[in-house]
Length: 102
Image: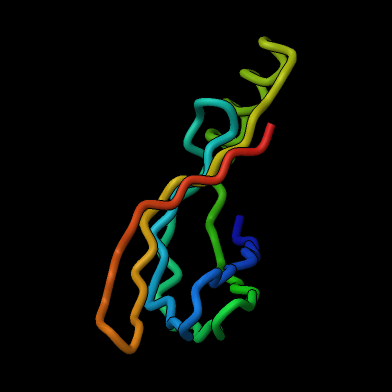
């Protein structure tokens, strides 16, 4: 099943930046539910946020595993882990990204 996944990307810096791509994995509790790469550039003005939409493919077996785990432990946490590739006027950088929701 293909689904559009939207991320809000924030640039806290004083200079404009271009997100060249974002490699990411989305976890529900400890289960890797989907992974992907945005693969397109997004210019983010200094101190601003922009929305980025990417299409993901969900596998029913992974979703099922995440649901079973959440029922078994009576809780679920959500995490996105990845690497952002940024282009700025002073060069290109990459850095790890991790967002956790409980």
